[in-house]
Amino acid sequence: MDSILVRGNGPLSGEISIAGAKNAALTLMPATLLTDEPLTLTNVPRLSDIKTTNELLSSLGTEVAVMQDGQIIVLDTHEITNHTAHYDIVRKMRASILVLGPMLAREGYAVVSLPGGCAIGARPVDLHLKGLEAMGAKIDLKEGYIHATAKNGLKGATIEFPFASVGATENILMAATLAKGTTVIKNAAREPEIVDLADCLRKMGAHISGDGSSVITIEGVEKLHGTTHPVVTDRIELGTYMLAPVIAGGEVELLGGRIDLLSAFCEKLDEAGISVTETKRGLKVASRNGRITGVNVTTEPFPGFPTDLQAQMMAALCTADGTSVLEETIFENRFMHAPELIRMGANIDVHGGHATVTGVTKLKGAPVMATDLRASVSLILAGLAATGETIVSRVYHLDRGYEQLVRKLAACGADIERISA
Ligand code: UD1
Image (cartoon, rainbow, N blue to C red; front, side, top):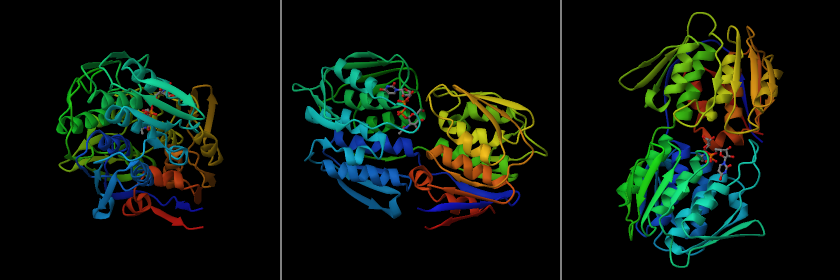
């Protein structure tokens, strides 16, 4: 198994192009199942999760054409030839559940493996299923598979989620585009990836309003058609690389970066003493003289501080001046990076959904293990400023969500390399 070797070597300087959002692509791609015409996606990030989604869609009958080294994907589902999303693909990637709503809406039935447990918590799919049931679907769980049927098609309904779920909002939004009548999603998730999905669906002929707010209204239509759509900027990749100069020192320009995608995160950086400047090409982040100030962070649904940046922020706060408390409210088991950061000399005390970080002046390189996607990148960031060598193993987690990570950081002067096993 490959690993990544990082040696802390002082300030960074340069620019990093931010890719299209993994989480947007993973919901835009299944939208192909809603139409028999081709859907072309551009600005697609080159990641293993995208390859897994291509594999999943191909297994259902989609013809997949990958162009420009993977940055353009044409998905043509003129016919759905198989209605079962098998466990061997779904277990690799929970977002596979997003084929359920579109396939059910177009075909009247779909069978999708229940996603297994996940390292960052239980992550059930009950809200996805309850939403589809409210639209008239019959759901049976048999031998680890969700069997969903709607013989006479799905019907519009008012669905109020008890809390905002990104995936459930996306599944119901896609399903509702082809349902009979009007669907209203209350307490909908407001993430930019949902607005991106709604934009694409509107280009395909869907009638959607209110996306980006907590109430989304969808008037079902008979048929959707093909379109071309660029994937929105990856705000999590953006936030991750914004923290690189904060941790390692120096100045980095993030091409394609936008403050509106990360306002709560930028406010926290400001509180910690880091200013973010808008440039013609994106955002610029420069380190400050001396240590950043410890800040308290609570993860929340958009527009709050993203759970997907909590691990990276913790890495930055390990060497802050003072104490920081990070509260994780979205996932119950999302501090697995803490023991690894402690191995590097961090002072962190995890108690339930909180982690108290008391800043130390310097971290020390160590062999560490990646446990999930965002945890693994937090260890790379920590390694950029640690003394000596940090070796991060289980790099396949990183390949799921960061395209060309080694190349992007090395171009800014980081001493980082991938070691093939
Ligand atoms: C998406 C993102 C993930 C991000 C998360 C929160 C993708 C592919 N993944 O995940 O990177 O960390 O949003 O911003 O876009 N829940 C239920 N029942 C459900 C669905 C969710 O209880 O049916 C719970 C989850 O366990 C979690 C919370 O709701 O505690 C929020 O999860 P959700 O917003 O659905 O996250 P995902 O869509 O899985």
